[in-house]
Image 1 (cartoon, rainbow over the protein chains, first blue to last red):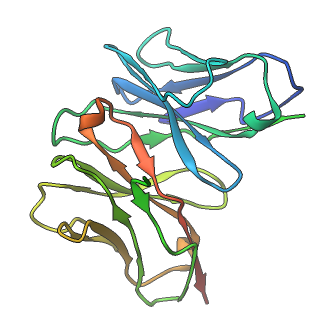
Image 2 (image 1 turned 90 degrees about the vertical axis):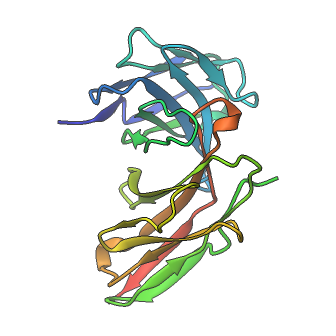
Amino acid sequence: DTAVSQTPKYLVTQMGNDKSIKCEQNLGHDTMYWYKQDSKKFLKIMFSYNNKELIINETVPNRFSPKSPDKAHLNLHINSLELGDSAVYFCASSLWGEGPNSYEQYFGPGTRLTVT
Amino acid sequence: AQKITQTQPGMFVQEKEAVTLDCTYDTSDPSYGLFWYKQPSSGEMIFLIYQGSYDQQNATEGRYSLNFQKARKSANLVISASQLGDSAMYFCAMREPQTGANNLFFGTGTRLTVIP
């Protein structure tokens, strides 16, 4: 069984379009994340979300918005796509850790977004 | 300031030998977690090992061990008995609870190549 799944795996679209990437986890985790990996392989957090709050990385343009219909899903909507949005987007999930408790994040397979 | 620094863009190791991948971190939070992930050419992110800041012993998981030197703020990954399948990108990451989130901050990665 796939733990964290993302669809689509590849997404090619034109500038100005609006697109969504879906993410689902079946691990019973309460926290989900979106990361962006650029062409130099650098991974950067975009959002984290649990049933209490959404935490947004302040560098993320407001064209990006996460939508969570339930605890098992965190979809990523992107409006008015730009060339610089081309990257691999990873969804991840984990249990929420407090204080010294940290839990590993399980990543989806990634979605390669290409904006032309 | 960079929270996680990986100074080795690329490393080579002979099959069956051990290799150390360097990672240093920067935080003022006394309670943090350190993670290593592997990203093979297929693109998925695979969790390898975790070290908590309060852990007294170095973490080990099979052929992976983490050389945690708290005073030096380093968390190097040691892979023993390298195998061809270990060829991949390796990312060091840190979680800082004081940021109010479980987000991971990643280093720039080290590309490991295992030579037969």
